[in-house]
Length: 416
Image (cartoon, rainbow, N blue to C red; front, side):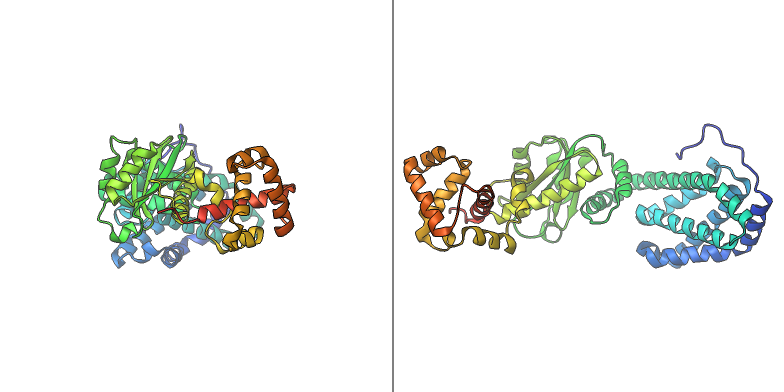
């Protein structure tokens, strides 16, 4: 139910100046309603796809709200009553049943609010009395708009929840929005609430997919198959499983059992299935990051030929930072190591630098790892400095060596 004030405020009747403005505007209501409808059809694809009969109901609803705005908000200057919000709630349920996304439904109301306000300001012109009285109504305008948007959102969500065949679409849409570049945090929060996601609790996103083909087009596995395996084996939040072109996305609580998830992935998609796990998030921004990290984990895990049954982004974040797999990363390795990687004859020197880097550039530990005397290591480093210009006493050089060797070893083919 929409929020109601504990006590409905008594309205403040319109000032004569505002009353004159309303009288001038009243004959243009139908024209204004048509403009709102036309702009909504122009920018909102789902509205544009509605049949003619449905568009007529949209127009009637717009005209009703314009009239309500003039009568209640401007003339009487009071909050809307529960009875006056019922038409908005009915319209929201109808749009939900027609498959109009909530984002488009709210956008249509925003278009109407914007055009009504522009029309009022233009009609008031430079008349100081009318503009002053119009500004006096701003508080009531915002209050009533919030009432309507809240009533519409809640009625829409309730209707969608009652239509079970929309559930999977809602989950898919939620994950698509998480992966989208668009800033839709407000809409995502509404969707999260409707799906029962507690944004004050930690969650993470995991992606399952076959080693090659995209799930959406080629895999016979369904969301229900994934949900059944998850039930009882993990604590999946309300069975939230989405089927996307990138794979099956799953929302899970903090501290996942990665071995269990890997077993589920193999059971569903075969032995070569890939599992990517993002970091933990406690709000919309955190879930967005986790979803993208899960996909990056699969991508980077594939690049570095990791045969592990799962890939945690946390284990691969440094490789992502250095742009593993990119032309820039390859150029960086070549620029730092140069001839050391171009000829097998330099393998001893390359391995010397590798062990030195792995042991934090501590000579005694590196010499032990190489099974050589520290004096021998010192001699090799002098050779490397003289032949290749690599001075490990320089801090920046050590950092560049560490990153170059990290990229080089990550991209090395796995042993058969």
